[in-house]
Length: 497
Ligand code: ATP
Ligand code: MG
Image 1: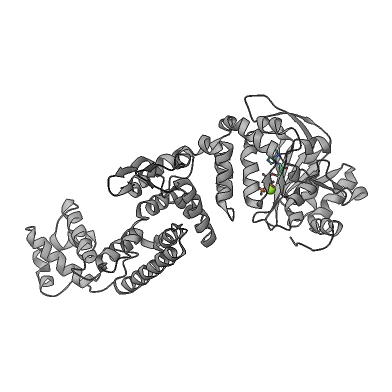
Image 2: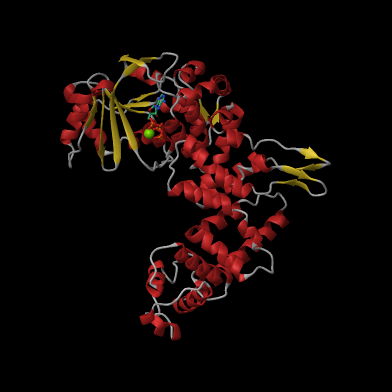
């Protein structure tokens, strides 16, 4: 999509540039059913906003499924059409574009469900059921009215004013479908728009109704907020609307400042969302953003005032990492390696700070490399993002310290290759050498070797590790198999791998 400096007319013409629209137009003319492109595509095109996964919504007044089929028949390569009879909708993928066809409809809602009663309607009925004015603009595709801009709710004005507003009374819009509350905040965050005050008030009023929305839908919006350029915008709106407390109580619990004996700690919520913004500037890894959001999640649980010292949060890194699975499960986030990654970063987020002192030992650096593995770079990003002091001098000092830590990490990694640590002596090696079956002994020996490497007693090298194993085994009273005795003199059967 191009953002031309030119006038509206020209922009709208560009929006219909894609050959797909010509085909829809032909079909619309031949079948003589009105068809329009509506919603997100029109909005993003007018904004000149590139969309990562482009989707195009076509509204047809009547016979949406038939039009979809006829359009697909004319495209090369011909896409496969998915039809949803119950909803009167159809869609297909064409050149990485998701194209949806819906019959124009009128919707009415019941109190206890997001599922409306649906009847056929006019284009304007269809626009009215849409969530926001900026999402309710349409462009006509029928040859007789090709390119006509239909904007009964003044979405274009709101687009220019950077305003989120609803076509209907917002209390009805949000009560009908509470997911729209999160969508409002998500669009405000993605686009850096304001939510109109009466609209915002309606979100506050309806906040408890968010619980009729499935967690999957909620998390889709939360992830989009997190993936925005400045996620803090969204979290502040979530907080002010009362939605934060409903959907992310653990984050809501970070709010507030305690004072005692003239000592205050910082507001952990405000700090946290600033850290999220900081990582957002450096990386588009969603899970790193989740790690930033959760890095201090155990601060409320571990908070203590210590006489003469002030506020402490001992163990919040460890306890926080233990809280992650429960939070992920509730939010229906994946419980796989993504969760483990978040847990790991939360658990380790203080460790690089411990390496900033001058007397840091190589073994401490090796241990961190071992535990962080390939996520060490993300961990360092998180640590740097965690600096939110307003004191410029302090910030510079901390950053300089972390720069030195990065250097040390690099130096030790080049020397000892710990990041992707593979035991230099395997369980099979041990079984073979001593002629013993799988047992606890093997684990003990492997652990001893790993410890010796991390401590720096031996290098991460097969020959040294093998010798060390023989030594340890002797202490444990293990005997080398007769025909392997020779190996004890020299080194291992094959030296390097
Ligand atoms: P994005 O694709 O960036 O998520 P979008 O606005 O295109 O944004 P979609 O979910 O693709 O959002 O929906 C397409 C259109 O359908 C929207 O622009 C809007 O007009 C309408 N819409 C989507 N969800 C809702 C909803 N919950 N209530 C009312 N209208 C909706
Ligand atoms: Mg869309």
